[in-house]
Amino acid sequence: MHWHQKIQYLIGQPVGVSFTNGQGTSGVLCGISGSKILIIEYLYQAQFALKQYEASMIQDINGFPACQN
Figure 1 (cartoon, rainbow, N blue to C red):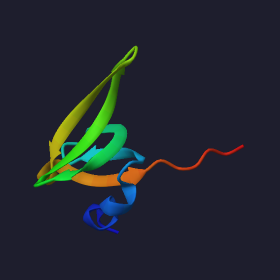
Figure 2: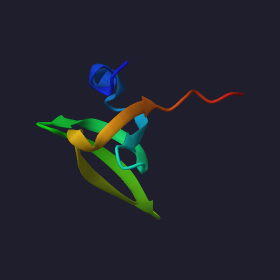
Figure 3: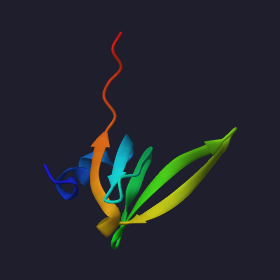
């Protein structure tokens, strides 16, 4: 399924994002604004940053799997 189709189900969830340049990031998907996705990423200690990524840079977005007990 293309990431555009599943993004509405992933808002508010931890996700991994792969970019077209081979890099990636992870964080909580906050939403989409125009042609950008909004993700809160952990920086260090108790600091987080809201980052914006152009939709054209994104190859895929996937939710984190559930923990195995």
